[in-house]
Image (tube, rainbow, N blue to C red; front, side, top):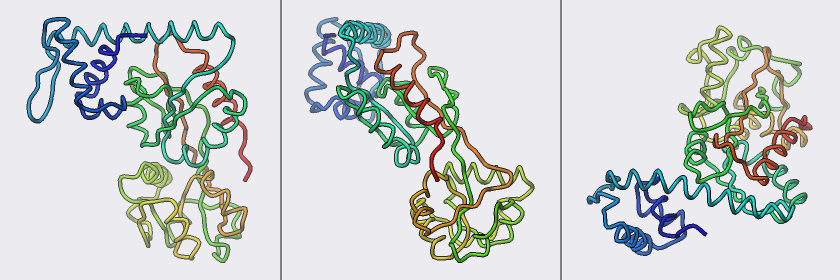
Length: 301
C-alpha cells in the first residue's frame, strides 16, 4: 500500500547500491533507477550523490530515509494488524540462519510450523551469523537464528537453546570405548580441525585454551573447510574431531561414527535475533514461540 517509489528508495538507501536493491526487489536496475528519479522529481531535490564507484545519500536523502523507514514500518504494522482481524496466522516469514542451524535444526522446525500454519510462506536465507544479524537489523529478514549471542544495538537477542559439541571418532578408534574425553587426552591424539577463521574453530580453540591446552600444540593431521569433509576424514580413521552433536546424528545412528562426550562439556548458545521495535506481528510472535519451544526439546541421538 505504501508508495512504491518510497519502498524502492528505502532499499537503495539501505544497500547504497542500485544493483543490490534491484536483486532484493526482483526488479531490473533501470526500473529501480527510474523509481528513484521519479521520487527525486516529486521532491525537486537530489537524494543520492552518484559516482562511478559508489553512491551516497545527500542531506535531503538522509532526511527522506528517516521518514521512509517510519512510514514503511507503520504501513507494515497497519497491514499486519488488519490482517490479524481474520484470526488466521498467515503471510510471508523471512527467516535467516547460520549454516549448522539451517541444515540440521530448521528443517524439522519449519516443517512442523508449516503443518500447523499452512497459510504461512517461509523463506530461508543461509549465511554466517554476522550477515544474518545485519540483514535482520536492516529489515531484510524478519528473524534470525545464529550460533552466538548478538550484541547488535538494534536487535533483541534471546538464547533459545545450547548446541552440544562432542568429540567424534571412527568405531575402530581406541577412543570409541571411552565414556568421555578431556582436552589433555585429545592433545595426545591425531586431530582433524576446521580451517582458521571458522566460527567453530574459534569456539574449539577457546575451549582448549580454557582447559590448559594451546591449540598450536594439537597434533593436527588435517585442516578442512567443511563439516562433511571432517566427518569423512574421521570415519576414515585419520583422527578425532570436535563437531556439533546435531550434525552427526545420522552417522551415529548408522554406526559410521562414535560420539564421545567432552569433559568438561562444551556448549555454545544458539540465539534468536529480531528487531527491537515494540510491535511484533502475530506471525512473528507465533514463530518465535515455536522456535523456543521446539529447540528446547531434547534431540534424540
